[in-house]
Image (cartoon, rainbow, N blue to C red; front, side):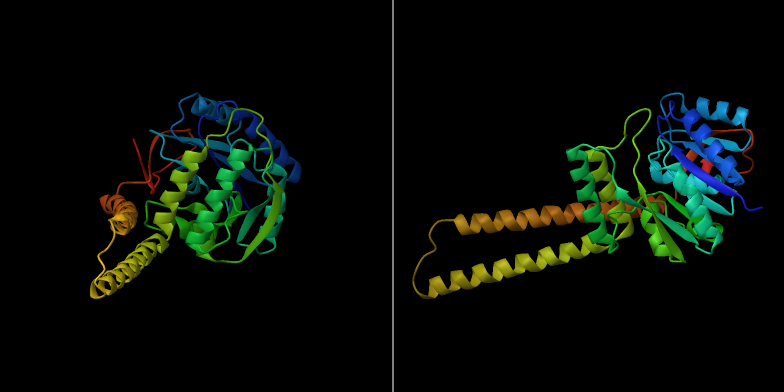
Length: 317
C-alpha cells in the first residue's frame, strides 16, 4: 500500500503540535490512507520538540527532528523531505492554516497520475490590511523576478517521490522550495483552498521578514536584479549624454551654465544608481560566498528514536 508522508516545518509551535497530530491522524485513518507525519523543529525556543517526542511516543507513525538553531523554513522543508519515506510527500504548515481536508483531494489526484499537486489560495483568510499589502507586494516582486505567477501559490503541495528525489539532488544551499517545484516541471495539477485561521499562536511573518525572504529568494533563484544593474547603467549614460549635449550647445552659443542644480541632480541620480547596483551585486556575491563554503543547509541536534541513518542535506551533531 502506498505511503503518504506529511512534512510539517515548525517554529515555536508548542501549542499546535498535539492538535495537528491528532487532526491529521484522525483524518487519514478515516480516509484509510497509510501515512507518517514528519515534524521538523526549526530551532524553536519553546517546547516544540518536547511535544513532538510526546506525539511520537503516542504514535510511532510520527517522527521528528530538531535543528541546533533556527535555519529558516526552507531548511525545515528540505530536512523534512530528507526524512520522509513516503511514495508521495505533502508539505504543509504546522498551524493548520493549510486545511487538512484538502490533502485527501491531493492524494486522489496523485493516484490519478499527477506528480505535483499545487495548493492554490482562493482566499487569504483573516489578515490585517497591512499584512495583506506586505504579502501582495512580496508576491508581485517574486512573480516579476522569477517569471512565474506566485500570487496564489504556497508551500502547501504534494510531490511524487520522483520529484522529491530530484529536489534533494540539487547541490545548492540557498533554495526557494515554492519556485523550485515550478522549475522542476513534471505533470502538475492544482487544488484551491482557503487559508484557515490559526487555533493557537501567532504568525511568525511580518513586513520586514517577508522583504528579507523576498530578497534572499530573488537573488537565489533569478538573475533579473543583475540585469537591472545594466538597465540603470544605460539610464545613467543617457542622462550623461543629454547633459553633455546641453552643456556643449550652451558653450558654443556663448551662454554659461546657470548654477549647479543640474550637475547636483545628475550626481545624486548616478550616485543612487551606483549604490543600488553595488547593493544588488553584493547580495549575489554573498550568495556565491555561501555556496562556495559548502556548509550544509541545516544542522540536526536531536531526532526521535524512529529516525535512522544520516541526513545527507545536513549534519547531525
